[in-house]
Length: 355
Ligand code: NAD
Ligand code: TYD
Image (cartoon, rainbow, N blue to C red; front, side, top):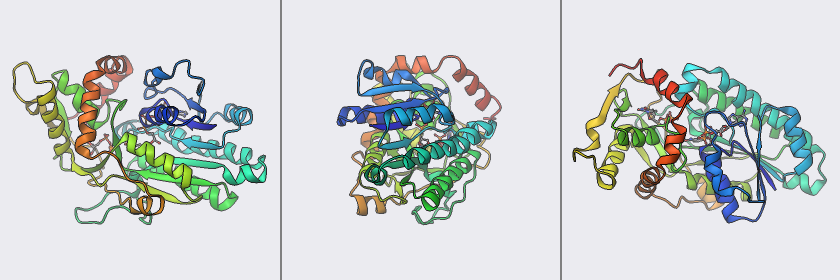
């Protein structure tokens, strides 16, 4: 079996659902269930013997030690993290704790467990660390896309904490020989995306008749990948990646934020027109920029394609249409995640931004 951490979050739950659907191998899912973790994402797995959910922290040394000794997974896939840049600006401490200290403790537990294995199991074991393109910093308009050789230049407490975790993972390979793999992926979108991030926030705000807050001039560029394609890339790297290697994951889909917001509005105009038949674009509002806002990310995913034969299945057009449709079909999921602490966060992040 494999152990996945953070499997109740956005990407992790998509990975778990796909894993259970596509393989017969059991999966243990360890998740702390922070505000971003949601068991509703995994509701279809209730009673499924291939999926074991455990609530807990990757930094809980005794818990992880027990789980590893009991279940003897052949691999660990580490999704668990604090993941939202704006939250890292307001409260960086949680990011240091989970992304750095938590990853360190998970690695240390993995190393001790790995040392108890026989030669064959030791050689076959994998620790796959799921990371982000944001560790490479910000690109200028004409810079080439990030390759695995780019320098780390993280600019936010989030990306700095992910960069630190990537370095720890690397060091566990070079120092102890732990068979690690690291993936650095571009921005994901798709089902179960928590509506604090750009795309789901725009969809849910549009439908609720609220403003669509675009930071700064809206010309910042992100490189978007449909979440299921990220999951297939992780499965491929787990299967065939070379221990110690880093793989960039992306779909060559650079878009300015304002273009994303306009696309979401166009799709909603088509699929769920406003009662007054005006366009949802009328709700777009430019607001105060994010401090230290990275201008452009772009991923060069040629290594993954050439060496491991991975390619995304979705284009941006097909993926974004599926995503908007998913939110239209899953209004109850949206209502549930919008209760309680979500409202406080929206208040905190947007109340002080001038329009
Ligand atoms: P998310 O915030 O939706 O989910 C994170 C999950 O981790 C949640 O279920 C949360 O409960 C859990 N978690 C948090 N702290 C924990 C802890 N200490 N112990 C155990 N579980 C804990 O994040 P996501 O968007 O699904 O991202 C998953 C991973 O992928 C992260 O490592 C992130 O850095 C990376 N990543 C995300 C993107 C993206 O666009 N979302 C892109 C590239 C890489
Ligand atoms: P986000 O989804 O938070 O991902 P990241 O910061 O990790 O790339 O933001 C994506 C882009 O959208 C980023 O440039 C910030 C911008 N953005 C807005 O313009 N308005 C918003 O309300 C949010 C949440 C993000």
